[in-house]
Length: 249
Image (cartoon, rainbow, N blue to C red; front, side, top):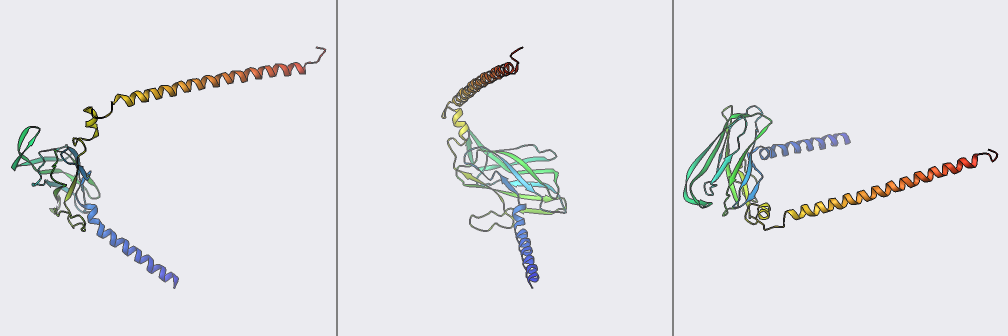
């Protein structure tokens, strides 16, 4: 009876595990943005991560559609070996000013083709983007994934906070409040807003010098002790030899 119950419990665990795996599979497979967040108003390097969620076909094309409500003036793809990339631009309803120049069009679609993402693998497509919008807390990237068997998967459903993830979620980049000028602490230090960058080096050099001095002193003390011990051993040997020598000799 106990063995029967054990089998039933084991089968229940296996069934629950399989159910979790099946329900979680879409979350593993969709196109995503890495890192998942960046600072408003700044520039960022993003990786469009594309897993192949099919075991009988390869991904041969990817389209990323940028958010038309929050345009990004500059989108520069990094070359990926084996893949061709095309950036399509579209006119802006309202021109934006970037570094003192008026921008009237912005990238709208990025298309990678000519390569292959085989089953059981993934590919990352790097993008340098900016300046990111300052009036939004997220950017939504619709993705269209095409396979060599002519299957097309559209990752275009916008996730909603507090709700279950949709079946075909779009990739999302969360935008956080910028720190300082939006380029990070390094920019503040370079502009002179932080501490003198030479001070830590000087402090470290002094510390290193102190360590070297202490090490040298310790070495000298140990050497002196060693010499003293050696002399004492020699003296002891001489005295012992004299005591063993017969008085008549």
